[in-house]
Structure formats: C-alpha cells, structure tokens
Image (tube, one colour):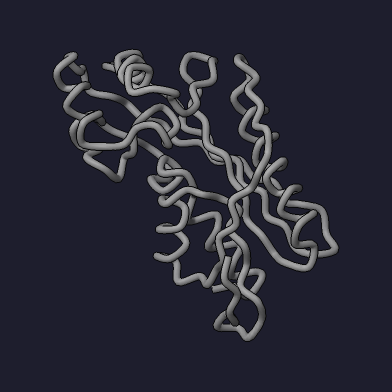
Length: 196
C-alpha cells in the first residue's frame, strides 16, 4: 500500500480488495485511494446469497478497520444468486465452464454488498442487485470464452466488461455492480464524505 494525499488534502480512502475491476471503477470515478488486500476467511451460506455477500463484506471491512482504524475504507463482496443458491468464484477452469453452462439461456441475480467505514462510526452496509440473462451457449462457446478471460477471480466465472457480449443476452440494473462494485452507490457515498 502506498499513501499520498487525496485531492481534498486528507489521506485517501482504502479500497479493501484485490479486484482489478473494483480498482478500475474507483479510478473511473476520479477517487483517490490506496489498495489493501484483506486476509479473512470468507463464508458461504449456500441458500442465502444476501447473507453471504453481506457477511463477507463486513468481515473485510472489520479486518481493514482493525488494521487501519483512522482510515476511511470501502470493502465489498459479490456473489451470484442462481435459483436461490450461491454461486461464487470458480476454483478451476472446468468449474467456471460448469457455471457458464448452468447460466446458459437463463436469468440470474448479481449481488454486491458494500461496507463503507468512516472512523468513529459503525460500518454502513448496502446491497445492490442486478439481473443478467445469458445467451444459449454451446460447449465450444463456453470453452472459447474461458480461453479469452481469466474466470477464476470472478463471481460466476465471467466479467461483463470482458467479452461480455459473447455470453450475455441482456441485463438490468447497475452494470458496474455486475463487475463487482456499484459505481452509482459509491459515487453518492463519496460525494457525501468529500472523497469525490
């Protein structure tokens, strides 16, 4: 992590995430930030996607708060709700292909829980949902997509921002939420706290 002054003259906020997509979203918002990768044991409640995302975001936020109690931070966790079941990050390329096969021709919900922390206050937790409809995919299309994108660090094994048109028929709600961090929510929060 490297520290510098933000445009407002105070220390930049911390993004408690290793996600390149979340970094990109914050950069596009013009927010100055430092990156800290948290070391937490994430949980999965197989039939409760909302609880899974919310608890993991709070775990990351709490870890960051204990390490940097005087710093403002944003932590997030993204999961997919597919027919009431949690789908997280695939462990292998084969599992990523299985996920994409499950989604083929169907709709699922992408959920991102975001925990905002300001020193001397309790974390503020928000949950944003977007709907995604997949195209009907053949095995060859799935293999081709997995060869173009690293699916292992992405909920559900895909990224709407990387060759998304190959697999996605349509979506509704926040596009950046599907990427892992709802820009509209973060921008509104950042404005309230003078970070944008």
